[in-house]
Image 1 (spheres, one colour):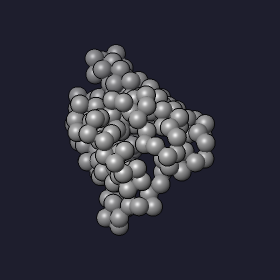
Image 2 (tube, one colour):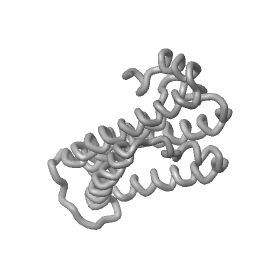
Image 3 (cartoon, rainbow, N blue to C red):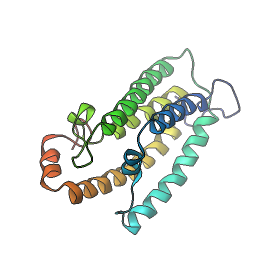
Image 4 (cartoon, rainbow, N blue to C red):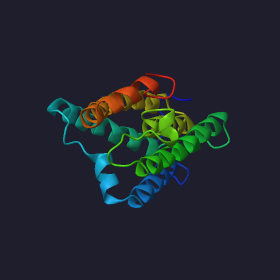
Length: 186
């Protein structure tokens, strides 16, 4: 692992897994009914502070994606294989979580499939995709930027939980008591 990898344009750079993830995500989202997509991206209940935090996170995320895109994958090195394994598990997790969310009736919180193990399985999946990609390019700086993005993204999760509590009440409160926020972590 390097602090900052040698940057440049290349076929086997981090843009490749980032693009594959984006294609899988967009294809899955396009397969969802409109009402499900609306529920996924509804920020109407967010506070001004939560929206401001989201904008700052976007700026750091652009820097992270730029660094990843210009960094060569460490193909053939152990970090590449570890990163690739985390990445694949994460992509599968995000897609499955979106499909589980799709199958949830509008009047109930998502609690089926991966939602039985985590209240935020999409975040858990993304929490494997990001580090997997950063490890596959062998960059400590990318991992540091990812930590900043993750801290900001956590605020999004908290806002979503507040919206679910407002919408589903005791049903969601009970779900929160049974199922951890991020797999083993509350």
